Image (cartoon, rainbow, N blue to C red; front, top):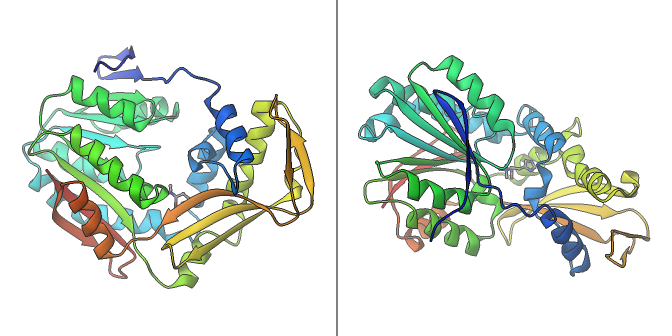
Length: 331
Ligand code: AVJ
């Protein structure tokens, strides 16, 4: 199978591949299908337009959202050990790299062992251009070959283009957005794009006191609420409609049976609207759009996931509060 892509040369140390799925109507189709289904739902991947990405970065700095800073503290403490356990590798691939802030610990440690290190950030957003340039200024021994596109397509490109040993990073508990069945499938796909000896570093947010979990998704300043409601704004922008944001309300709560935080947008009233050719989409008061799941893991869940994907856990690290776990897996 050959993946199609377009390569852009930015400078001697920086290239970008546009793995684009090319289909601009995907957002529109998915939103309409999601709002017609029962219960109503929209995939969390649609949070991340420019405004949404900015709001997510802001969430990461709220006092309640412990996830980012906890993972960063683990990376800070153990990057050297991770690099030493992977001293045969000069290729670092990252799924969902965003601004690559936490990745700096890893890159720094790898560059101390070998140069040049080739970093392949993968993200759906143009943020790669800025973050790539910033990294190149910071790290002399770095080459950046970014891929703008969706994970699965980008992974195919990675496995075609790079034959040398690699480590793939999947940080931030982004895997928590997937339902458990799909997380398993996704790990299998990653595994299929790796060779023996490659490794995988994954961040998992752990099950903990419900109050801490609930607070992290209901920050006082209302940033998470704004992030959730930004979906309505995005629908307005992309469909050219004017749904009143004030007719929806953010809610997020831990669902212990499913071991996940659920985020929804609740309709505050009976309302209906049309999106290009969607027909009438109507809401009852208190009906919700399910906008995100964020799974919280136990050690057993992580073990089962790795096993089902045929990966072995080589090492893992937690913070002192046991809030978060970073796992190094291998094939
Ligand atoms: C980026 C999926 C890891 O689930 O914690 C943060 C997204 N949503 N606050 C998470 C998110 C609301 C985040 N992930």
